[in-house]
Amino acid sequence: MRMVFRWFGEGNDTVSLDHIKQIPGVEGIVWALHDVPAGDEWPMEKIIAVRDQAAAQHLHIDVVESVNVHEDIKLGLPTRDKYIDNYIKTIEKLAQVGVKVICYNFMPVFDWARTELYKRLEDGSTALFFEKSKIHGIDPFDLVQTINQNSSLTMPGWEPERLAHLTSLFEAYRNVTSEDLWDHLAYFLEAVIPTADRCGITMAIHPDDPPWSIFGLPRIITGQDSLRRLLSLVDSPSNGITLCSGSLGANPDNDIIAMIHEFADRIPFAHIRNVRVYENGDFIETSHRTQDGTVDIAGIVKAYHDTGFTGYARPDHGRHLWGEQCRPGYGLYDRAMGIMYLWGLWDAYQKLQPTAEKRDTHESIA
Image (cartoon, rainbow, N blue to C red; front, side):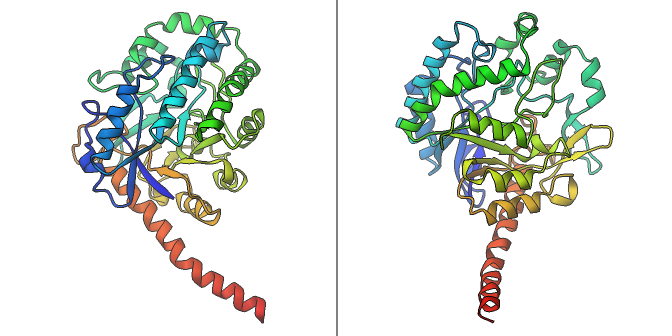
Protein backbone atom coordinates (compact mmCIF):
# COMPACT_ATOMS: atom_id res chain seq x y z
CA MET A 1 0.00 0.00 0.00
CA ARG A 2 1.42 3.35 -1.07
CA MET A 3 -0.02 6.27 0.91
CA VAL A 4 -0.87 9.54 -0.82
CA PHE A 5 -2.69 12.70 0.25
CA ARG A 6 -5.05 14.89 -1.74
CA TRP A 7 -3.80 18.44 -2.33
CA PHE A 8 -5.75 21.12 -4.17
CA GLY A 9 -2.84 23.30 -5.16
CA GLU A 10 -0.94 26.35 -4.06
CA GLY A 11 -3.31 29.11 -2.94
CA ASN A 12 -6.28 26.71 -3.12
CA ASP A 13 -5.67 24.55 -0.04
CA THR A 14 -5.43 25.26 3.68
CA VAL A 15 -2.99 22.33 3.98
CA SER A 16 0.57 22.92 2.81
CA LEU A 17 2.95 20.49 1.14
CA ASP A 18 5.26 21.01 4.10
CA HIS A 19 2.53 19.67 6.41
CA ILE A 20 1.75 16.74 4.10
CA LYS A 21 5.34 15.52 3.97
CA GLN A 22 5.38 15.29 7.80
CA ILE A 23 2.59 12.67 7.88
CA PRO A 24 4.31 9.28 8.34
CA GLY A 25 4.34 7.10 5.26
CA VAL A 26 2.93 9.67 2.82
CA GLU A 27 4.97 9.59 -0.37
CA GLY A 28 2.98 11.65 -2.85
CA ILE A 29 0.09 13.99 -3.53
CA VAL A 30 -3.18 13.39 -5.34
CA TRP A 31 -3.69 16.49 -7.45
CA ALA A 32 -5.42 18.17 -10.37
CA LEU A 33 -5.51 21.48 -12.21
CA HIS A 34 -8.73 22.74 -10.67
CA ASP A 35 -8.65 26.00 -12.58
CA VAL A 36 -8.81 24.27 -15.97
CA PRO A 37 -12.42 23.80 -17.14
CA ALA A 38 -13.64 20.28 -17.84
CA GLY A 39 -12.96 19.36 -21.45
CA ASP A 40 -9.96 21.63 -21.93
CA GLU A 41 -6.50 20.28 -22.66
CA TRP A 42 -4.23 20.73 -19.64
CA PRO A 43 -1.35 23.18 -20.23
CA MET A 44 2.06 21.56 -19.88
CA GLU A 45 3.54 24.50 -18.00
CA LYS A 46 0.90 24.15 -15.26
CA ILE A 47 1.50 20.40 -15.01
CA ILE A 48 5.24 20.96 -14.65
CA ALA A 49 4.66 23.64 -12.00
CA VAL A 50 2.79 21.17 -9.77
CA ARG A 51 5.43 18.49 -10.38
CA ASP A 52 8.18 20.90 -9.31
CA GLN A 53 6.29 22.08 -6.22
CA ALA A 54 5.81 18.49 -5.08
CA ALA A 55 9.36 17.45 -5.93
CA ALA A 56 10.73 20.27 -3.78
CA GLN A 57 9.13 18.51 -0.82
CA HIS A 58 10.22 15.04 -2.03
CA LEU A 59 6.65 14.07 -2.95
CA HIS A 60 5.59 12.41 -6.22
CA ILE A 61 2.58 13.24 -8.40
CA ASP A 62 1.74 9.69 -9.56
CA VAL A 63 -2.03 10.05 -9.00
CA VAL A 64 -4.29 12.67 -10.58
CA GLU A 65 -7.81 13.25 -9.27
CA SER A 66 -9.49 14.19 -11.46
CA VAL A 67 -9.28 14.88 -15.15
CA ASN A 68 -12.96 15.73 -15.36
CA VAL A 69 -15.08 14.32 -18.17
CA HIS A 70 -17.00 16.98 -20.10
CA GLU A 71 -20.80 16.75 -19.96
CA ASP A 72 -20.99 16.48 -23.76
CA ILE A 73 -19.15 13.14 -23.48
CA LYS A 74 -21.59 11.89 -20.86
CA LEU A 75 -24.50 13.10 -22.96
CA GLY A 76 -23.13 11.48 -26.12
CA LEU A 77 -23.35 14.71 -28.14
CA PRO A 78 -21.58 15.10 -31.51
CA THR A 79 -19.19 17.58 -29.88
CA ARG A 80 -17.83 14.84 -27.58
CA ASP A 81 -15.04 13.87 -29.98
CA LYS A 82 -13.41 17.29 -29.59
CA TYR A 83 -13.37 16.90 -25.80
CA ILE A 84 -12.15 13.30 -26.01
CA ASP A 85 -9.25 14.48 -28.20
CA ASN A 86 -8.35 17.01 -25.50
CA TYR A 87 -8.57 14.26 -22.88
CA ILE A 88 -6.19 12.06 -24.88
CA LYS A 89 -3.70 14.91 -25.23
CA THR A 90 -3.87 15.47 -21.47
CA ILE A 91 -3.19 11.77 -20.79
CA GLU A 92 -0.10 11.99 -23.01
CA LYS A 93 1.16 15.07 -21.18
CA LEU A 94 0.59 13.53 -17.75
CA ALA A 95 2.56 10.44 -18.77
CA GLN A 96 5.54 12.70 -19.52
CA VAL A 97 5.77 13.74 -15.84
CA GLY A 98 5.36 10.23 -14.47
CA VAL A 99 1.63 10.04 -13.70
CA LYS A 100 0.49 6.43 -13.25
CA VAL A 101 -3.22 6.74 -12.34
CA ILE A 102 -6.00 9.07 -13.44
CA CYS A 103 -9.08 9.00 -11.24
CA TYR A 104 -12.27 10.17 -12.97
CA ASN A 105 -16.03 9.75 -12.62
CA PHE A 106 -19.00 9.54 -14.93
CA MET A 107 -21.71 11.14 -12.78
CA PRO A 108 -24.12 13.45 -14.63
CA VAL A 109 -24.13 17.13 -13.56
CA PHE A 110 -23.15 16.60 -9.91
CA ASP A 111 -20.13 14.62 -8.72
CA TRP A 112 -20.74 14.02 -5.03
CA ALA A 113 -23.76 15.32 -3.12
CA ARG A 114 -24.32 16.27 0.51
CA THR A 115 -27.12 18.27 2.11
CA GLU A 116 -24.96 19.73 4.92
CA LEU A 117 -21.24 20.46 4.98
CA TYR A 118 -20.70 20.95 8.72
CA LYS A 119 -23.11 18.66 10.57
CA ARG A 120 -22.17 18.48 14.25
CA LEU A 121 -21.28 15.10 15.70
CA GLU A 122 -21.65 14.08 19.35
CA ASP A 123 -18.01 14.92 20.13
CA GLY A 124 -18.28 18.47 18.80
CA SER A 125 -16.52 17.86 15.49
CA THR A 126 -18.38 18.47 12.23
CA ALA A 127 -18.60 16.42 9.06
CA LEU A 128 -20.26 16.09 5.67
CA PHE A 129 -23.86 14.84 6.00
CA PHE A 130 -26.46 13.47 3.58
CA GLU A 131 -30.13 13.67 4.55
CA LYS A 132 -31.90 11.32 2.18
CA SER A 133 -35.42 12.74 2.53
CA LYS A 134 -34.20 16.32 2.12
CA ILE A 135 -32.58 15.65 -1.24
CA HIS A 136 -35.99 14.80 -2.71
CA GLY A 137 -37.45 18.17 -1.74
CA ILE A 138 -34.51 20.52 -2.20
CA ASP A 139 -34.16 22.72 -5.25
CA PRO A 140 -30.92 21.79 -7.07
CA PHE A 141 -30.04 25.49 -7.22
CA ASP A 142 -30.24 25.68 -3.41
CA LEU A 143 -27.93 22.68 -3.15
CA VAL A 144 -25.41 24.39 -5.43
CA GLN A 145 -25.45 27.43 -3.13
CA THR A 146 -24.94 25.21 -0.07
CA ILE A 147 -21.94 23.45 -1.59
CA ASN A 148 -20.33 26.64 -2.88
CA GLN A 149 -20.96 28.84 0.16
CA ASN A 150 -17.20 29.20 0.69
CA SER A 151 -16.28 30.61 -2.70
CA SER A 152 -12.62 31.15 -1.75
CA LEU A 153 -11.94 27.40 -2.18
CA THR A 154 -12.91 25.38 -5.24
CA MET A 155 -15.26 22.47 -4.62
CA PRO A 156 -14.35 19.70 -7.11
CA GLY A 157 -17.33 18.63 -9.17
CA TRP A 158 -19.26 21.77 -8.21
CA GLU A 159 -17.50 24.35 -10.35
CA PRO A 160 -19.72 27.48 -10.54
CA GLU A 161 -18.87 28.04 -14.23
CA ARG A 162 -20.41 24.69 -15.18
CA LEU A 163 -23.30 24.75 -12.73
CA ALA A 164 -24.31 28.21 -13.93
CA HIS A 165 -25.94 26.30 -16.78
CA LEU A 166 -27.88 23.98 -14.46
CA THR A 167 -31.26 24.44 -16.15
CA SER A 168 -29.94 23.55 -19.59
CA LEU A 169 -27.98 20.60 -18.16
CA PHE A 170 -31.10 19.12 -16.58
CA GLU A 171 -32.97 19.65 -19.82
CA ALA A 172 -30.19 17.91 -21.77
CA TYR A 173 -30.40 14.85 -19.49
CA ARG A 174 -34.19 14.68 -19.57
CA ASN A 175 -34.28 11.69 -21.95
CA VAL A 176 -30.91 10.12 -21.10
CA THR A 177 -31.38 6.66 -19.58
CA SER A 178 -28.96 4.54 -17.59
CA GLU A 179 -28.33 2.41 -20.67
CA ASP A 180 -27.58 5.54 -22.68
CA LEU A 181 -25.04 6.54 -20.06
CA TRP A 182 -23.43 3.09 -20.22
CA ASP A 183 -23.16 3.46 -24.01
CA HIS A 184 -21.54 6.87 -23.66
CA LEU A 185 -19.09 5.55 -21.06
CA ALA A 186 -18.15 2.68 -23.38
CA TYR A 187 -17.56 5.13 -26.25
CA PHE A 188 -15.30 7.24 -24.03
CA LEU A 189 -13.27 4.28 -22.76
CA GLU A 190 -12.88 2.75 -26.21
CA ALA A 191 -11.41 6.07 -27.31
CA VAL A 192 -9.02 6.79 -24.41
CA ILE A 193 -7.88 3.38 -23.14
CA PRO A 194 -5.54 2.68 -26.10
CA THR A 195 -3.66 5.90 -25.26
CA ALA A 196 -3.63 5.01 -21.56
CA ASP A 197 -2.23 1.57 -22.47
CA ARG A 198 0.51 3.12 -24.55
CA CYS A 199 1.37 5.68 -21.87
CA GLY A 200 1.41 3.27 -18.92
CA ILE A 201 -1.48 5.03 -17.19
CA THR A 202 -4.50 3.38 -15.57
CA MET A 203 -7.88 5.08 -15.85
CA ALA A 204 -9.59 4.43 -12.50
CA ILE A 205 -13.29 5.25 -12.29
CA HIS A 206 -14.70 6.55 -8.99
CA PRO A 207 -18.08 5.16 -7.85
CA ASP A 208 -21.10 7.44 -7.75
CA ASP A 209 -21.45 9.32 -4.47
CA PRO A 210 -23.97 8.50 -3.14
CA PRO A 211 -24.47 5.29 -5.13
CA TRP A 212 -28.04 5.97 -6.25
CA SER A 213 -29.93 8.38 -8.49
CA ILE A 214 -30.50 11.95 -7.32
CA PHE A 215 -32.77 14.55 -8.94
CA GLY A 216 -33.83 11.90 -11.46
CA LEU A 217 -30.38 11.79 -13.04
CA PRO A 218 -29.05 8.36 -14.01
CA ARG A 219 -26.17 6.94 -11.97
CA ILE A 220 -24.52 3.72 -13.02
CA ILE A 221 -21.37 3.00 -10.97
CA THR A 222 -23.09 1.95 -7.76
CA GLY A 223 -21.96 -1.54 -6.70
CA GLN A 224 -20.29 -4.84 -7.50
CA ASP A 225 -22.37 -5.72 -10.56
CA SER A 226 -21.81 -2.32 -12.15
CA LEU A 227 -18.06 -2.45 -11.49
CA ARG A 228 -17.96 -5.87 -13.13
CA ARG A 229 -19.78 -4.44 -16.15
CA LEU A 230 -17.44 -1.43 -16.25
CA LEU A 231 -14.37 -3.65 -16.46
CA SER A 232 -15.95 -5.68 -19.27
CA LEU A 233 -16.52 -2.58 -21.44
CA VAL A 234 -12.84 -2.52 -22.38
CA ASP A 235 -10.85 -5.54 -21.23
CA SER A 236 -7.54 -3.86 -20.46
CA PRO A 237 -5.39 -3.42 -17.35
CA SER A 238 -5.62 0.31 -18.06
CA ASN A 239 -9.36 0.21 -17.38
CA GLY A 240 -9.52 0.18 -13.60
CA ILE A 241 -11.33 1.24 -10.44
CA THR A 242 -10.87 3.81 -7.72
CA LEU A 243 -12.53 1.77 -4.98
CA CYS A 244 -14.07 4.23 -2.52
CA SER A 245 -15.28 2.61 0.68
CA GLY A 246 -17.17 5.75 1.70
CA SER A 247 -19.14 6.17 -1.52
CA LEU A 248 -20.00 2.49 -1.83
CA GLY A 249 -20.44 2.16 1.94
CA ALA A 250 -23.35 4.61 1.93
CA ASN A 251 -25.37 1.62 0.71
CA PRO A 252 -25.08 -1.10 3.39
CA ASP A 253 -25.93 -3.75 0.77
CA ASN A 254 -22.55 -3.19 -0.89
CA ASP A 255 -20.00 -5.84 0.15
CA ILE A 256 -16.79 -3.85 -0.23
CA ILE A 257 -14.55 -6.65 1.04
CA ALA A 258 -15.93 -8.98 -1.63
CA MET A 259 -15.26 -6.29 -4.26
CA ILE A 260 -11.62 -6.00 -3.18
CA HIS A 261 -11.13 -9.75 -3.52
CA GLU A 262 -12.88 -9.92 -6.91
CA PHE A 263 -11.29 -6.83 -8.49
CA ALA A 264 -7.90 -6.92 -6.73
CA ASP A 265 -5.86 -6.74 -9.94
CA ARG A 266 -7.94 -3.82 -11.29
CA ILE A 267 -7.76 -1.46 -8.29
CA PRO A 268 -4.80 0.89 -8.69
CA PHE A 269 -6.22 3.46 -6.27
CA ALA A 270 -8.19 3.13 -3.03
CA HIS A 271 -10.16 5.74 -1.10
CA ILE A 272 -10.52 4.45 2.44
CA ARG A 273 -13.00 6.25 4.70
CA ASN A 274 -15.88 5.51 7.03
CA VAL A 275 -19.51 6.59 7.15
CA ARG A 276 -22.27 5.98 9.64
CA VAL A 277 -25.48 4.97 7.87
CA TYR A 278 -28.78 5.44 9.69
CA GLU A 279 -31.89 3.28 9.32
CA ASN A 280 -33.70 5.98 7.32
CA GLY A 281 -30.89 6.10 4.73
CA ASP A 282 -29.17 9.24 6.01
CA PHE A 283 -25.40 9.03 6.44
CA ILE A 284 -22.64 11.09 7.98
CA GLU A 285 -18.91 10.84 7.56
CA THR A 286 -17.04 9.78 10.68
CA SER A 287 -13.49 9.12 11.80
CA HIS A 288 -11.73 6.28 9.99
CA ARG A 289 -11.96 4.08 13.10
CA THR A 290 -14.07 0.99 12.36
CA GLN A 291 -16.23 1.30 15.47
CA ASP A 292 -17.24 4.88 14.69
CA GLY A 293 -19.12 4.06 11.50
CA THR A 294 -20.93 1.38 9.54
CA VAL A 295 -18.09 0.44 7.19
CA ASP A 296 -15.72 -2.37 8.24
CA ILE A 297 -12.49 -0.42 7.74
CA ALA A 298 -10.43 -3.04 9.57
CA GLY A 299 -11.80 -5.74 7.28
CA ILE A 300 -11.23 -3.60 4.21
CA VAL A 301 -7.57 -2.96 5.06
CA LYS A 302 -7.15 -6.69 5.77
CA ALA A 303 -8.63 -7.51 2.36
CA TYR A 304 -6.15 -5.17 0.68
CA HIS A 305 -3.33 -6.72 2.70
CA ASP A 306 -4.40 -10.30 1.96
CA THR A 307 -4.68 -9.63 -1.78
CA GLY A 308 -1.19 -8.14 -1.91
CA PHE A 309 -2.35 -4.61 -2.70
CA THR A 310 0.54 -2.47 -3.97
CA GLY A 311 -1.53 0.40 -5.33
CA TYR A 312 -2.07 3.90 -4.01
CA ALA A 313 -4.39 4.72 -1.12
CA ARG A 314 -5.56 7.90 0.52
CA PRO A 315 -7.66 8.53 3.62
CA ASP A 316 -10.24 10.49 1.61
CA HIS A 317 -12.57 12.74 3.60
CA GLY A 318 -12.19 13.64 7.23
CA ARG A 319 -14.05 15.50 9.95
CA HIS A 320 -13.33 19.12 10.85
CA LEU A 321 -11.50 19.18 14.20
CA TRP A 322 -10.15 21.62 16.78
CA GLY A 323 -11.45 24.73 15.05
CA GLU A 324 -9.62 24.07 11.79
CA GLN A 325 -10.79 26.32 8.97
CA CYS A 326 -10.59 24.19 5.83
CA ARG A 327 -12.32 22.95 2.70
CA PRO A 328 -15.27 20.74 3.76
CA GLY A 329 -13.99 17.20 4.26
CA TYR A 330 -10.38 18.13 3.54
CA GLY A 331 -8.72 19.37 6.69
CA LEU A 332 -5.33 18.21 7.87
CA TYR A 333 -5.93 16.75 11.31
CA ASP A 334 -8.55 14.05 10.80
CA ARG A 335 -7.07 12.82 7.54
CA ALA A 336 -3.62 12.60 9.16
CA MET A 337 -5.11 10.62 12.06
CA GLY A 338 -6.93 8.46 9.52
CA ILE A 339 -3.63 7.64 7.83
CA MET A 340 -2.12 6.56 11.14
CA TYR A 341 -5.14 4.32 11.82
CA LEU A 342 -4.77 2.72 8.38
CA TRP A 343 -1.04 2.23 8.89
CA GLY A 344 -1.70 0.74 12.32
CA LEU A 345 -4.01 -1.86 10.81
CA TRP A 346 -1.63 -2.55 7.94
CA ASP A 347 1.39 -2.93 10.21
CA ALA A 348 -0.52 -5.29 12.51
CA TYR A 349 -1.52 -7.51 9.58
CA GLN A 350 2.07 -7.45 8.34
CA LYS A 351 3.30 -8.45 11.79
CA LEU A 352 0.81 -11.30 12.04
CA GLN A 353 1.50 -12.64 8.55
CA PRO A 354 4.78 -14.47 9.29
CA THR A 355 3.19 -16.18 12.31
CA ALA A 356 0.27 -17.35 10.21
CA GLU A 357 2.60 -18.61 7.45
CA LYS A 358 4.71 -20.55 9.98
CA ARG A 359 1.58 -22.10 11.45
CA ASP A 360 0.31 -23.13 8.02
CA THR A 361 3.69 -24.63 7.13
CA HIS A 362 3.85 -26.57 10.39
CA GLU A 363 0.31 -27.90 9.92
CA SER A 364 1.08 -29.04 6.36
CA ILE A 365 4.16 -30.94 7.53
CA ALA A 366 2.24 -32.57 10.35
